Length: 265
Image (cartoon, rainbow, N blue to C red; front, side, top):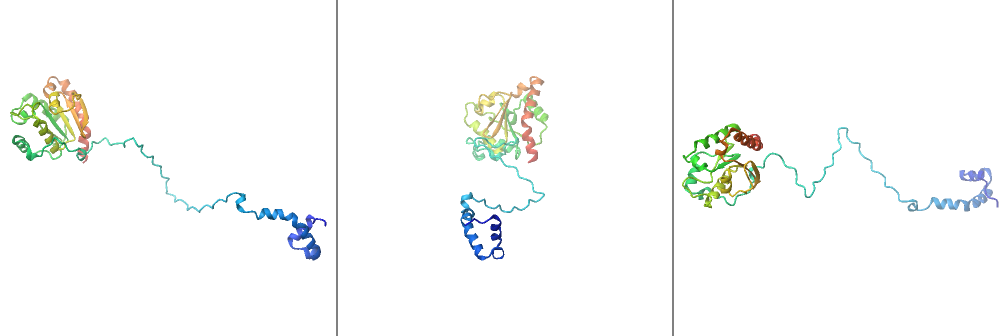
C-alpha cells in the first residue's frame, strides 16, 4: 500500500475524506498514516516532567504608589563593636552608687552643719575640691586662694548652680591622709550632689581622695561614670597670669559639653 501523499494527508486532517476520495479510500489512507503519526503523538503525549520542570506563574504585583520610596537596608552592628555615643555626657542616673558613701544621717556633726550652712544646688554639674577648701568654707579662708578661685569661676561665665564646692577635710579634723573617714565623707557629699564632673586641684587633694597617681595636673579621666579633671593647686595658678590662663582655657573646653547639656535639659 502506497503511503498517503502529503496532499491527501492534509485532506484527511481537514476531515474531507468522504468528499474527495470516498470512505473506503479514506480508511486505507488513515491506516497507512497511523505508523508515521504514532511517534509524533507519543511525543505530544509525553509527561510534562520530561520537558523539564514547569515554572510557577508569577503572582500579579500591585503597582507601587508614586510617592513610595525604596527603603535603605540597615546594616547590622558588629558583635564586638559598641554603638556610637553622643558627645553629651551621660545623665546622673548612669553613675553607680559609691560604696564609700554614707547617708547624711550618719555624717559627723561638723559635716552635717556644713551641709545645712547654705542651700546646695539641686543639680550641680561640677564639684570642686582642693587642699584648704574646708578652711575657706569654715571661716579660715586664705585670701589669695579665695581670689584665684573666684576669678576662675567668673571667667567661666557659667549659669548659677553649675558649680559647688565640697571639701575632703575640715578644720580641727585629723589629717585626711591618715583618716579613713575623710575620703568617705567627701564621696558621701558627691553621692548626695550627683555631679557629672569632679574638679580636683593639686596632687595633695588627688592623693587624699584615693584617685590614680597618673592623674597629673592638666589630665582628665572618666572614673565611675564621672569625668575627673586635675589642675594645679590654686596658689600655683596665682603665681602668674599665663599659668592661670592655660588652666582656665583647659577647664572651659572640658566643661563646655556639660554646661551645654545642662542648658538644654
